[in-house]
Image (cartoon, protein in one colour):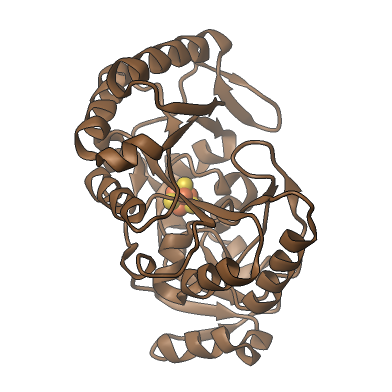
Length: 331
Ligand code: SF4
């Protein structure tokens, strides 16, 4: 991964990971900042510079550690070792939170974050599942920090319950031989290749993602798939049918037997429209006035009729093509 510069909080360099990153990126300019949340120089940039801004790496410490209850695949969303990402999915939910500053931020106080997580997991009377990848893509992040190599064996040994994270990347080689004790649920996000190429800019191809799930499943990790986000663009039915057929043909029998599905319909926002129209003027416009409606704070979602049609279509195609695979939810 090529970066142009590293913006860093000086205190990060007293952490082991901070030192490691300094060595790794010794040939880049290191620019001191007061706080990773407010880099004035970045805030002043134009929307059109969005992709250029993604070529910066931000290094700091995470100061807020509030776990948010969640009732889908996990019990809690845990702020973990990074936020943002170097890829540029045109609908990326992080853009709602960080606006054009959705670049990759690495938090070097990982020991503190994992200690806290292990403690919380052990204090519970029932096994809990912690989602650690809701703010970034940990498989991508791991290629820079090795944070999963740090996290998975330690949680497997010392933690109770499970960890889980979703990804759109295939670089799982280094995870295959880790002692995970079945406590880490790997979830791969998939979409039709035509949409990956046009919308999920900078992420792994569908073929590579499928291969990665097969390998993780073979390595004993419990695995799931997210069909997310479902985008109701021209020709969507044919594209999603083709996707399901590809999953049936290319996922191993073992993966198909044990996997579960999560299905999430796309949401979009005024901020996405503003950034995408200036940063990617030739990209497919994901805003569809006919199909979408406002859902407060400048956000849009598909109208109830459109969602109902999509849900019915997907449920029946999944049954026809993949059989009785478990659908955890459609949201
Ligand atoms: Fe956002 Fe995930 Fe895409 Fe990265 S891979 S841009 S975090 S949706």
